[in-house]
Length: 198
Image (cartoon, rainbow, N blue to C red; front, side, top):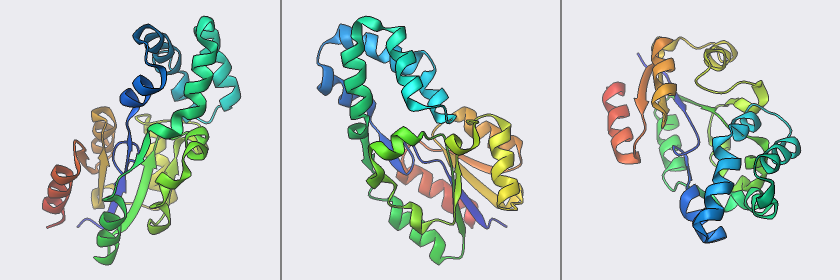
């Protein structure tokens, strides 16, 4: 019987809508390409999710595309603007809690992102806790972070449902014996979850 629901955060309980944000911020396609390369395609953002110092990561991004330092700094400092609240997050969590389920989070998340827009995390007080990758030095789909939440909250994986927008992360959860849902939208995920909770 399922007793615990584990949510990813980014693009599940909040929206990380990067493409329109950077298009509006930088306008020029060539500039956008170079800034995207520095921030996302180098893997440095994942290092920040692992808890590495954000100032050091920013410098590595600049070193990757030094001709675009000003634009990289602007984008890095403004990234909170691309994070949007999901209106369904708190009602969904409150409904599950009211029905007796424990609700946790397991998220790849950087401290920089937390401080960039803390208001989007206003659902956290309604949850029973969870694990941020930046606190553990490891990111999904590394099995160690799944073991961390299992051990910390004394979970029986067979009694858990995990929701994530990454197929790789979902597959790792299934490998640990959890039920898992690939999140592709609220209505679909909610319906899939309800089927598992019957």
